[in-house]
Amino acid sequence: MSDAFDFDREINREGTHSVKYDGRQAMFGKADVIPAWVADMDFAAPPAVTQALTERAQHPIYGYTVFPDSLYDALISWLQRRHGWTAQRDWIVMCPGVVPSINAAVMAFTQPGEAVIVQPPVYFPFFSAVTQTGRKLIQNPLRIENGRYTIDFDHLERCAKEAKLLLLCSPHNPVGRVWSPQELQQLQQIATRHNLIVFSDEIHHDLIYPGHRHHVLAAIANNNNNLITAVAPSKTFNIPGLNLSALIIPDKTVRNTVTQIFSQFHVSASNPFSVAAFEAAYRDGEAWLTALLDYLQDTRTSIEHFVSEHLPDMRVIPAEGTYLLWLDCREWHMTDAQLKYFFIHEAGVGLNPGVQFGQEGSGFMRLNIGAPRQTVLGVLERIKRARYG
Image: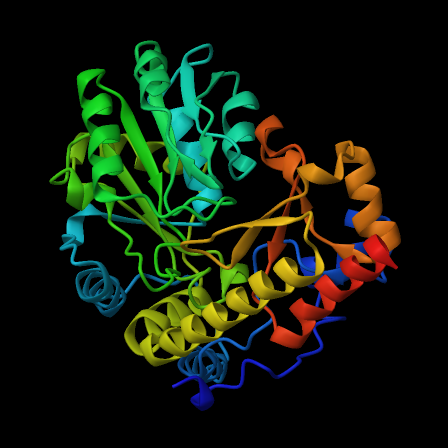
């Protein structure tokens, strides 16, 4: 299957206003690092997406755009086929990206000073969505046991007593956990007991490795009234720059509360190109995704072997999902500032420092493996040379 798409092809992204490449100087203070940080991939999007964008571009008017029924049908069919979840058309709210949606949920369901739970180490906009809106940040840190992260449910129960909202990352970025049905059920039971609204960011839900399966929290919870599920084709099909996602909210009152926030800011997710790409990806991108997952699995295995053989004092936290690997460098006994300097200035590679994801990420680095395998192995080779000479 992987032979049908060329994931080994190196595509020059410089000069395309790419954050990942053209933003290196601003991010790392130098432009000559191999970038393996921001979560987009260096692979061409599915051919069906490129074809849909090309066809739309050939019509020379790019005006205000509505969401066609066929777009909703493509999303609903995808969720049913890939995840066994039947979402209804009127549950879906189209929105301009998951991060704006997180902020909208915080503003919709909490007042300044009220508490929101996050589970670090976690995607850093979870923190800013709380702190920059004047809400109280409550942290329920994940526990790492034998190289695997778990939820501290006893602590979560205590946190839930004073919080209004929980921001869940499922699958989890950056640690790569795919939560089990039992974990999700226990989390939802706590939320129900304390009338806690859960915003479940499931943007990575299609990127799951063999032996694991993503479970939609809403499906586990029988579409509980206090659940908001965020999905998007952006990570799955490598189209994050098109900024279109969907919130799926079974409860009408909760749904209306969220849409009122977007209405207050006159935010529109409508864009003729994002609409075309969204629908084409979900309708015709499945073969490409199957090939991508095969490729990423092989890359992940190659990295694990390389690190085991050549970087014995680094550990790779086993990723169950996402194209992001969490590297444990704590045995290097470096401060986070020293770790950052080493990777940028000695190894010449651009990764995300773990502390960006909270203090629990201290001593870790996040590696994006969504690139041609020779590029990713080149990153590790640079780290090896800088570390051992």
